[in-house]
Length: 444
Image: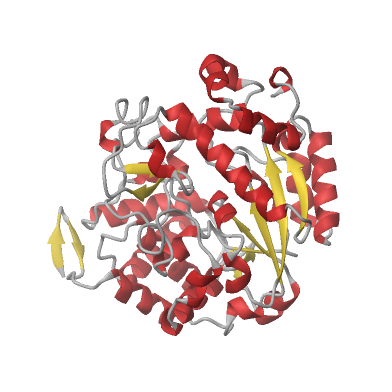
């Protein structure tokens, strides 16, 4: 063991690929050919900052659906199916899947099945700690986080928080409390982990981080913590819809059927008026998180790189085809481009009616409890799942904002109304009208 910054850690040297391979062996996938086993794929399509994380959090409470614990993007990055390796944007086509080697397909398949499932009330400590070690590994890919060392540190932290709160074996009522203990222990052991990059520190009084958590990003910060989870069985894969959410999937709607060849693909189309979404994107770009694409050349985006010069190498949120024309535009223009591109891609895929879809409005999910219940009842009927148990409780009570940059409030975009109206071009207004949003004076 070597000593670093007052702590101990094992000798370094293992690559990220080696660490993930070790974790796959220890976690032992139980379902072979996961992507071929899925019979129904539900893709949540939206523009960024339109409430997809909140809707996914609600749907994740249903035991009749399968989910990934977080977003889909990290798995594509690990497989080499992301910018700049696979393409010059977030777009993926069937050819990208067919060009993937059998070995990489197998690794991707195993990583996905180990993440797919639904929430649980209890944890199997061994499995849970391995899952937490995997998540930490992809959150901090540059650190030589030895899986065995992390699991043992996690075991001690878990015992400590259970003793502290009087929890029984298998109980983990507060995952953020556990992760806070684990991250502190790893930091004392010499690992350069900054807890301010986690969602659980959003309400902290500590100053925010001043830049990205590293030069390589696999999971987009602010990072998630790992909750108790039932890993999918073969029966789950063949009987429950798998829900995938990330706005980048708008540019992969031709790719996903190739990846899941036996699945019927359906789309939940979540919309939000352009002014509110564009305003949310503007806030998100200036937030100390949401790093996803490190560019090969620095950006020169007004109101972004001048306000946050340390971020000039980072493009945030989805990367639509044609982004190269916006590397020196104003930030508001970039945000309008992202909203317009996301919906153009979605509508192009849906035109013709070949893909079964349902449209939901974000405004209906937040305007009142009655409106939220009505919308989610319609969605559950469309999905063919019961609105019962913890899912029903979540729908009735609602959930707090997920990775929000500011508390939601009606017409929050009005503080930048002049700037936003300047970028509402005819294409955006046409799309908004097509989606059922009339005059901007009525937009929430």
